[in-house]
Length: 382
Image 1 (cartoon, rainbow, N blue to C red):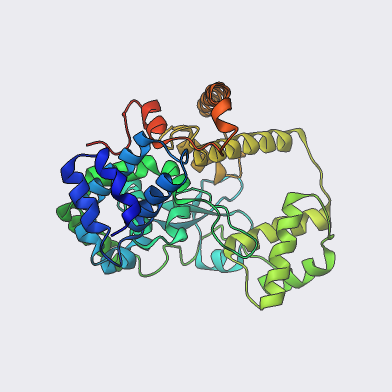
Image 2: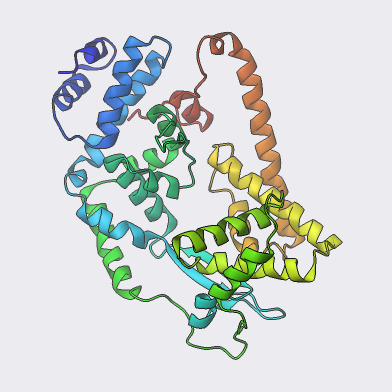
């Protein structure tokens, strides 16, 4: 028994305490339960780490995971083998003066100029988020967590520095959605749909050929070696720096860059050989791109809901390299930017109020606070 959990019986109901005390004695627990118990133990040995309300919230999380996901967590073979099919890569081509179309196999292989990639969700984006958060909750593998757009910090020796408690704060909404939806019947129905997707997507969706197919004269291999000689080192230009990194990696490890990396190299090659003529239109595109990227970053930080329609617009215009954005679309993006600024200001005001408490410990937004801001009360209350 984890003796340091004993104080919990004074703050939670007897039924929940019986569940937690039983689970705490077991080995090979799902990651989310094992780390929750570790966090609760630490909360009693390091006062001020999290408050009593959040201790109770974490205990409620244990109960909700038990009720909705514990059975399916006992055999994760289906989930792990099918999770990659919840989001697939679709390559498209933006040919000047024409509508975006599927890319041909040759355009993908050559990383042709204008090549774009978008994610498609064969069974819906909610299924993608639910199955990935489940796989993270059970295995603890960072890849599933990062797929959902959350950023993790690692040390120079690649050890995870982001705490489990911080991760719970980040993914609170995804966990709540999973727990409300999760049951054996729903999981089995999702697995059934994903098996159909797996059979359908055995090969990449692309065209065999197209009348306006883009044929590149320089092979990817030759492109890498030419840029190795042409690219300036030590530049502050982010696109150049990215290209240098791709080239060095390709030569050092004798690997071919991805189709999108090759497309980037072709654009950089044009800049190096033809010069950088920055026109007014390009400045507008860069400004729009910066604003969109700031919104994506704000989404990762939980400053705005990922459901805001602006993110659908960003997904569309990013595929066109930010060259097409209607006034109506831009107004929606500006609305999202305003919401982010309001949330930042609200958090700054809240931080000022809690400044005295924050002087003795690193401040973490409480799980309770996050859900209160959503009008939902404590995170893991039934």
